[in-house]
Image (cartoon, rainbow, N blue to C red; front, side, top):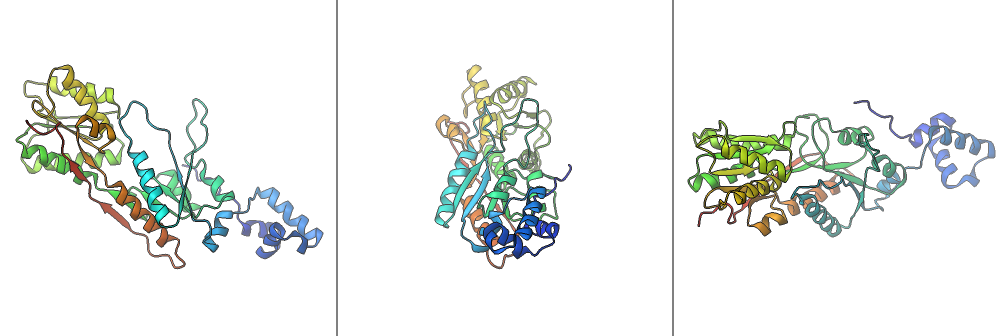
Length: 347
């Protein structure tokens, strides 16, 4: 990935114009204090560098903004995932209690056939608005957002681990997905299931791989086979429905239970059971992940992420990050809990 040139700073303008930083500040805020030729030289440098006074940096010094920026991505259609809605609400509440407000923004419109700008919206806020810091929610390895914000020296915290980036220098908060899936698999094993299938996401998702690890290590620990008991598909209801049907039809010894990487895939599995006249829990057990509102309405057992607790920790990390003497960045890994409902319990 090519690193874009960071926005011009006040120091860049001062160097180009051959003046001090204070002179540049005066040209912006008190132009009457400067001689006409000096003012013209600074204005020319500002124009040539396309410099916009960095309100974010100004307010970081005065601690007067109390705004936290977070970019929203478009909702994925044909899924049951409402995790982001719940997380945003939790973050807004936690920020309000700490005296902050959350500013939501988008990455801008994307023309058909073009890839979205991974830093779309960030530079605009850094250059021209009073944002103290950012919350980043996409944290895969080499993520352009975390890389770009680090290059720009913009303060941010991440909801999600930096995974393989051992040199990451930003604070983060995450949920232990592997532990959540392990609890789900242990729950099913405790009910007597031995052929417990995994419905997961396609390769490339570190979150998905982490969740799968919880299923796999639990199966191995109990001496249970995983052969022919897993599928990797897109995160849609249709894909979950088809994958569940394929696994059930694969042999005479099909799975008696499904653990899914998301509630979306679990809903797909429930559709398959309904089409075959099978009762969730009694005939085949199903467990999802995220504990969405859909799961609660449908009686789906699901792993619930502690998003409210995560939001509190994120805001606490932000306050430490923005303190006059910042602390060393750290990470917080939270444990989810299993919400047991009728889709996995035998009547």
